[in-house]
Image (cartoon, rainbow, N blue to C red; front, side):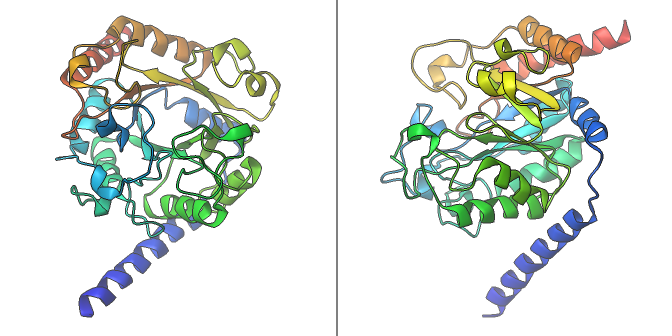
Length: 339
């Protein structure tokens, strides 16, 4: 009984401290905050979840609980050191994908990493590593969830309605915003729907806890200050040619202040995932460092931020070829700075 009370007290203290940190935030003027976000420049997008072990991009939830996440390790120091060596300033981490598996110790569901064989709060561990290596933290979050009412397991949201569980969506976002320190920006994935909370209302809810966090949505009704260009490229705000999936919003919505673009470090290949760890047979595949550097340079030209995606493997480590490639990119960035 004493252990239980101590655990509850610790959890309450953590929430209170997180809320205190958020309460201290004063919303910066948009121009000043936008400049801070633009100054993030280059970062690492990390996708690590059920799909790492499924061998495909989307993992249906039927018959899968937390034990499906079979990672045997989690080397967040390696992630952050690789990012720093590559000249990166932030890590964009997948907190929850469409399958509903949470990579933090949420109180909202049992489908979470602390109930997996790994048994640790990965996001908390990553936060400590980010602070250790001087790396900022951003989060990817699937708004909807295939476990929620209205969803079709493993399928895209029909008409962008999809799943609905507004109270759980808000509770999960509150946990992430109050217990894991400042979040620079949010990459909100609309593929499973908006979870029952519209995008403008989602931004308003999130800004109660961290008014300076930037929020972007990859599909659906545009809102927030961050323009997301999934599989896109560098370019001026409002240029619809820069994005593959969100052309209408890019061309018409006037609220964007900064654009982010991202794509996987894996080139085109057959079989396996793209954004997550693919398959061992693809461990030799990687985009050339010259390509990554050129996209970094283009991002700087247009004031965009560039997130290159990597997928940690079964052991929770970034592939050797990715580490080697990103280190070369970092050397190129450093060389250009010194010339």
